[in-house]
Image (cartoon, rainbow, N blue to C red; front, top):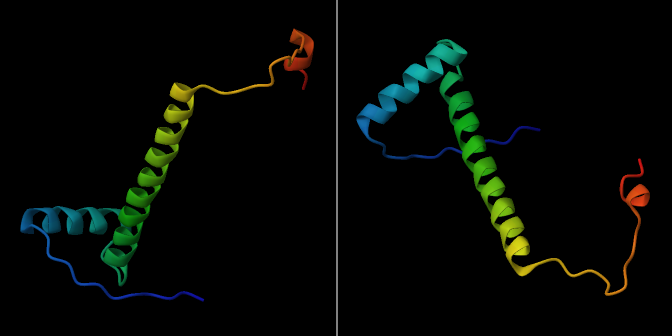
Length: 82
């Protein structure tokens, strides 16, 4: 089931015009073309934010170092086993 939420935002006129042109060029001038474009834009923004969080956590782990068992041994064949 698709649930939607109505929002009201204020944006710069130039940005609004460019976004509407983008929406028309990508989705055509059909009913719902702006909704689709906004959902795509918000989705990309959220996904990029999540990717940035993952990158930050990975970099933090690299800076802290990864702890392994003191006497953990392996040979090259085991490391590359598939």
